[in-house]
Length: 371
Image (cartoon, rainbow, N blue to C red; front, side, top):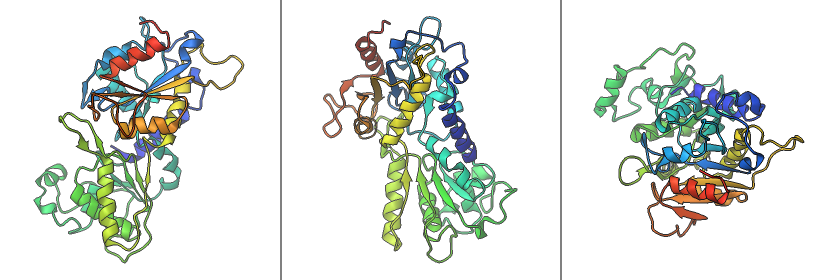
């Protein structure tokens, strides 16, 4: 995935939240409804609530279809608020549309790295390194490609047969960088952890080299360049029966090693849930997803009576909604990280249900919306 694409797509996505609703939702599938239908909104987590891998779970397809009328027009505003990422919101929306058989717009998808758009201008002409799945664009190097410019920077590279198969050239860069002249002599100005690391040993080693030397591996100790994590999830629910280690676990590993070896403490910024800013972003976007006819005629900004967060991770989804405060109402499902019979002890939700279909059924009954 191209990091510049991600950042620019995120910029386009966030800009769309400030332009007119008529411009965003010109699709015939978003139409006028009674104003009372927009007095609430829903934010769905994806992994462990809507999907496991690419498989819909918990009656998610049926649940989402209940948010549309018989003609396929949206009647309840909703967004996906996920710490996942690695692809532009438009691509993720397209994937979700195919998997769930409902029309999902890019503006309804808020990913962990969406806030990175705020940094586009600051680093657009600088050398930055991206960690995670995908292929970066010019002037933005993946950590894998960046490492390929430094001989012996990864002492275990010779044992990683999959790396040689992917690049076709173990000892050198996999492609020509037209606008980067010798990355070994250029200072890395920032590091973005966009999605999950695919090679912890290499990435921890190379990031320690970058971050401890002011962006010039192999040189003397210097001030650390900025480090940004798209989220700080310790674990998430995938296809395997038990949860998998997430970006937060990688951050703990990197931080523990860095602080043990180097004189300065690692500095970083994390985005995504449970940061309250993620929930404020969701609320702002939901205001733009309100169906036509539901906006106040006097031009005042609409406020929601209730915003529902449906998630499977108590320490991320539920904690975040609780800390965000009113008007957020948290609903915890048992289809992902959380599998307990009762509520979570440390981060109790306002409601616990078996799956997302039950959550949507509760919301629609509470709000007086017929199926």
